[in-house]
Image (cartoon, rainbow, N blue to C red; front, side, top):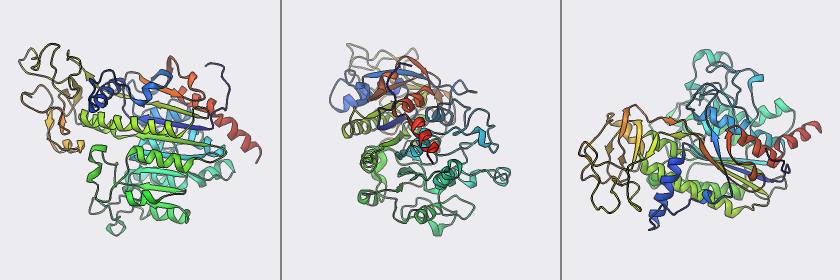
Length: 485
């Protein structure tokens, strides 16, 4: 690393575009430009204007193509680990209760110990792998609530991820012997993992007959409110708008939050990623010690898994807007902003389309006005997937995951006359799978602010933690506070 001063960053914001590989960034850049009546190729997303860039090698210790649990653990702790494992070193065995020595402290935990305010913003479930890696330790990413755990794990004393969100402050006080404020801001989805499997516990915004999944009878939303009598527990846009102080827990959906294009379908309303980011920064700012904030656009990944480029690109566009908002609300003198992805997807930009051709459209060659035909005599789109559920056309449907109700339809299809730019169009995929997979190539890192020059060249993914740690001296300040207790 460069020999740069340590501790100059008062604030750190880590933006994670889940599944936002370089092909996604390129396609979203063009898509966002074309939404502004540009050709598209000349456009730049907000974070592409950052002064420092590098590449991140995303493999897990045991996997060439990674998952989000292992990758986010690397970014949050500085330690690479196995796929499916959250907040633990590779010494932990997936599916077995971990030992204390397996735990690797996260940047958010260090920020708490250093006296900073902390926040989590995600469009996924708050207990999903990426956000969970900021506060939890789990040898199985799928243990989001107790109903997801085998009896043996429960009897052995393993704690589910949602429960760990509630016990974060207490656990930290027990482990380190110091009082912390706890996580001041948490916005996302995933109410089902906080509620008991009892219809009487349903919220006003429930989408299922019985919203909760928990089999232990606990209502973690009520427990959080009891722990934080002056805190704000919100589930809808109206409640979100009224929040002016911390702590705040916003759980806006039963499962993941809606895709940005589908957000207006929410009966009680839910905020956008940009709105949550803006609110989080407003609530966390003003502290002498500064803050640490992690913002995840989780639904880029989910759109890709569903083989729906429209939503993947639209989510990336919204992610770019959230980054721009954060940059405008902070100063490059004291705030390090890092934008990256945990992994890529098997998403391609192919053929020889002419300049300005609609990125979601069929390939039309330079100088031509009609779609190019492949050797099988059929047209094809610029964007496609190596594997997945394959081609479907759901018209104007904005919920990409409704495709899982359709049969797998991989391989070449006749898309003549189809509007491939429609929200519900799902691109062709070569290899049939229940869900499209991650990709194993490097992803980009973009940085601005104190410590940003450390982002350069090709890096192991866990270096991202060390950039944040050095820029804000998180571990040093945490150690100083612990030694003074």
